Amino acid sequence: MTATRRNWAGNIAFPGVLHEPADLESLRGLLGSGERLRAVGTGHSFSDVAVPAPGGLPGAQVSLARMPVVRELDTARGLARVSAGLRYGEVAPWLHDHRFALHNLGSLPHIAVAGACSTGTHGSGDRLGILATAVRGLRVVTVGGDVLELSRDGEGPGCGTEFSGAVVALGGIGVVTEVTLTVEPTYDVVQTVYDDLPFAALVEHFDAIMSAAYSVSLFHRWLGDVVDSVWLKTRVGAPGGSADPLPDTVFGARRAVGTQSPIRGGDTDPLTEQGTPGPWHTRLPHFRLGFTPSAGDELQTEYLVPRHRAVEALVALRDMESDIAAALLVTEVRSMAADDLWLSGAYGTDAVGVHFTWKPDPHAVLPLLPRIEERLLPLGARPHWGKVFTAPPDAVRPLYPRLGDARRLLTTFDPDGLLSNAFLDAYVRD
Image 1: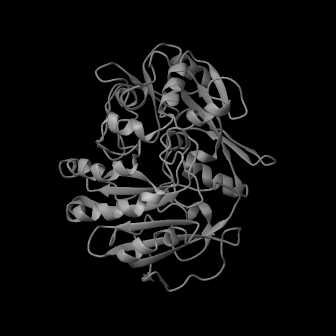
Image 2: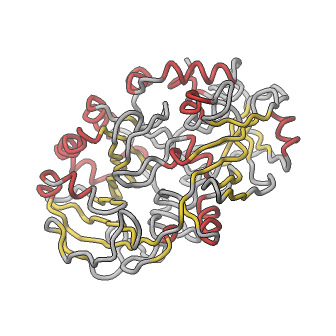
Image 3: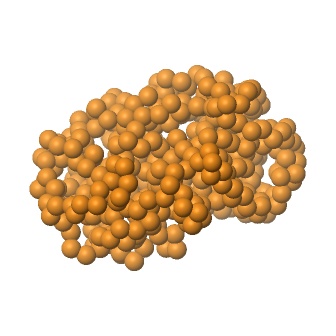
């Protein structure tokens, strides 16, 4: 199929041919054809990370949407093997039906497993790694059409210690067809929302606030001296959880009445249920699968700041808060545990994501990003690979200590750059 397609937000175009192989042999044939290809997932990225081919060169995309669906459980080892193109909103209910769960989920269940993991997408929780930290194995079709099983226990390129470079690889090592994930017994979660957290309390008690529940999100519009809301997602009846009722106030924020949207006054119909316990996969995401997530028409930017610099980062943004507020729908602040994945925003450091959901106005948003980046990047903040950012490669590369190893791994798998594009060439390969 040849057409110009766009991501779900409409800000990125995907021109050229879209291949949709229906079986593994067809996919192997495509990878062995010498054609320039990029894998495409659900189109929930906002950057050029999935746009095919280096600038000006012909290229195509390959979708796994028509491939056979794989869902397999190894209950003895606590592992689930699933099709890479499945969305988390399709995998999670199946796991729950079999009494299993993942450690965390993103705010949207609409994202594909492989796409989310390969770009370093995350949920929230002080002790919880990004989504990719659950990955224990990858089935990959490489350039040339070979099918490889990659794992920490395997041998060869992408295995052993190099598996840390293969999981978050921005699509540069091959087309991932199946992902093996660590699972655990299912659990329940309750969401409790608190309104109007004083910004001064956030600064003084940041660590206590972000560790107050299994998963914590802060929503802020940069208007006045209060953070709009604190969302506490608490595990019920499990280690690290609680069955006790939460207090009416938390650090000066009061418990909200009724269902609250991350965007104050926004539509609450798409939201997962608040105030009552329910299965993990119906509470950890903010939005339900059957609805358009977030605001729909929007742009997104995110910077992952080392945890020990997070308060400094938030304070640094206050001197441009009126400019941010004019172009913003909402900012979300989330935390995540350190990991060893070479291209992860949390590589080697506990991190805090400062996420901006912008109005769909590039003329207003893009001029703000260099000003935000000049405040955050000197603190060690790493731009999320799948969001809009303007920092040049020379400013981003030094933020990743294992970038040289990642470059060598991608070159080993794809010496001619047939799976690369202008984005990957600029920030990793060249």
